Length: 507
Image (cartoon, rainbow, N blue to C red; front, side):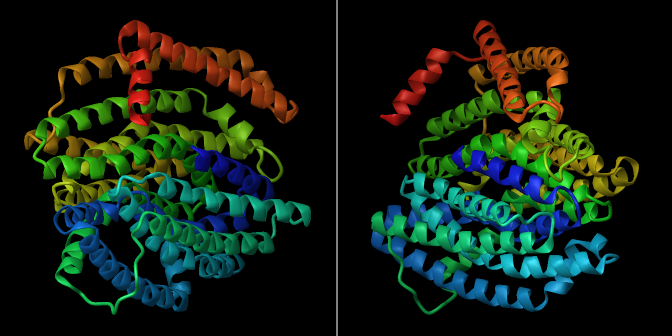
């Protein structure tokens, strides 16, 4: 949550300094590529293969055997990443041709995108290593350091942006260059933080000669489909970004909308997925199948209790949210409207993106990365087809809608397959509560839409920013009160039960 809130501060400053013009688009493309790998590796996709194997080594060979396996993987991964980074730096113009075809007609923007991506690209190397160390800590039941690492990225970038403001820099190339350097520096700091956390946990890795040992080969076999399956949402967003470069400012609209809906996705979906995988792996190892079903049902129930109302709220009041967060400086009212439409389209798919994070560990914990990869391929095909068809009809909104449709297709395929295999059985409590959560969310959405109509006059640049923040906060508070009151009355959730669960977990 701290990381996501600081991320909003970061993006508010980026919007004020760069807006949605050519320089903003170039930075988004430069940041998107290494950031894609951060999400692929750091938010659970790489660990889909690594955590079950590392946990089994700990169970069978103790810490010494697990450390040896970790060192083997670390050495091979480091060698591969150095080679890949060097190759990418050399061939960067061709990478930009592929990932931002719309920039070809603007040589200055194209050259800036190449420069910024070259500066930011080492972030990919360090974040991939951070992901490995995060998997080690998560397997040992230590989640805090890995979850806190992204805070450093936002602290560094906010500091860089404040420095640009003090230097009176604005919507100009040097601001983008400074931001790109901040990305790389943040990668180094996050890596050092996780090295220290592993040392404190008694799991310090030494460097070995890179060798494809049997354990590493198995990780590669499981890891490639696991990364594709676990990171499909981000791959779909990258594809959308490539298509969006064909429309001026569309890349920025999608980026800012993505940042808003990433708050509930990151706080709820990714957090639950990261914790659920080692939990299911341990329970399956102990043949505790009753515990497996209980964990999956409660994870799905809890995630939907937080995600469905968040999605409904983003659909009901996207304009005030975007206006308060971003509309200042170089970010205009027309940018607010375009971003708000994209946010609503993404919000329709928010529950599906979280469901993917909840269902995927059911496959990964059983070392089945192939099935989710196949479903991810189907989802990607739907996303590309939908984006191309709708982009020429409704522009960047069509790209967001295509991501949403692809997300729902993937989530349904994962859930139905687990159910048919008998690896996920929805219990009575889940079946009773999901419709009630949906009804409580709809009631909250109606209340928000009604109240937003009265508050509309406050959401203009003519109103002081503190006043707009207070009005938006009151809207959010009113929505939360309506939702939790309706949830309590309808039996969708029990506040007392939630408190007891939180106390039990903390103890």
